[in-house]
Image (cartoon, rainbow, N blue to C red):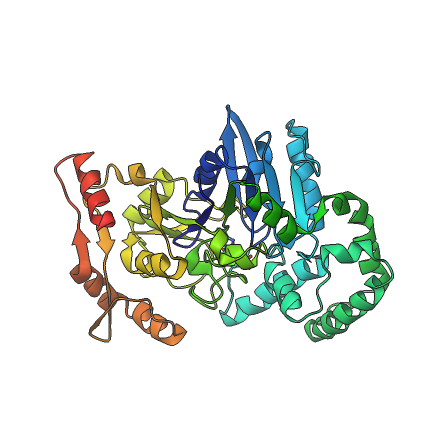
Length: 405
Ligand code: IMP
């Protein structure tokens, strides 16, 4: 096996976990390179079900090294809790099989609170993102704002107080604005020092480790989280997550050069789902959408929220193939479509009377198409290709052939 990057080609929840687990049997190292504990999937191995959120999938397989790269935001409490849950299931986790980049950004309780406060405040103005409220966005903001606390900082108690000061100057100003109590310096120091002994043993200079391993012929699997349409640059901004989810991030988020990413595998569901707010051109609000949700068990692993469901959107997947440089696609959940009389694929949009073959980058333009539901519907009927056939599996194989083309 060459090195493989696994990415979701839609809005996440394409079934990456199963494929990553299957591929991890053939890999030596499994690396997470973006996101945090906003991701979530369930692995079933020998009849035992493991729920993973922050830890790379390889961690449950013996003899594999799991690596959390610098591009991930790490909530130390969530990390400790997840390790504890897996250990209770008999999975041994130690620096033998888990390493975390010493330059990875930490998510603190103040990030989680801010995420929630912003979402609550935005609910009144209708500008809510529908985040997982795990503090992902605020932690990435601090990283880019150069005031984040990183894993390595826990090992240096001399420089930590000044960093906490810098971060609190920013956060306490925000908290005053929200009318909530400011945070004491001592409280953050206590939060950080209380977890240091449990997380520091996993600390690693990840770029160096991966470079050495690669030179010695190790096979590396890069495990993407979320999906392409949630990418901070290429997704349906602002209804996105706060990291780059496209395959190129596997390099920057782990400290390897782009040449290390040899094969990009896009995981694609045979229909479309999304959790949270934001545009969704092929969304179905009818009994077919309900059928897909029930048949496909479309409930969020992290928040338990019901996923919105719709037809396969080839415009979006084409875009994902390009922005990720996808080499091959694994199509998932085709069986869920069995039982439907008619299957549809969106091949283009109609916007202001024009055929459009890319999702408009502008939120206003996207909203324009969303708002005019009847027109979009008419457009949708006009532009949808029918993939009908007499019986399953012939009908599904028609769908499969159509998606391949
Ligand atoms: P955040 O990542 O918590 O900031 O959430 C931003 C958006 O990304 C929201 O719409 C979430 O529902 C969505 N999101 C984050 N993680 C996942 C995931 O693993 N699967 C699907 N959607 C996700």
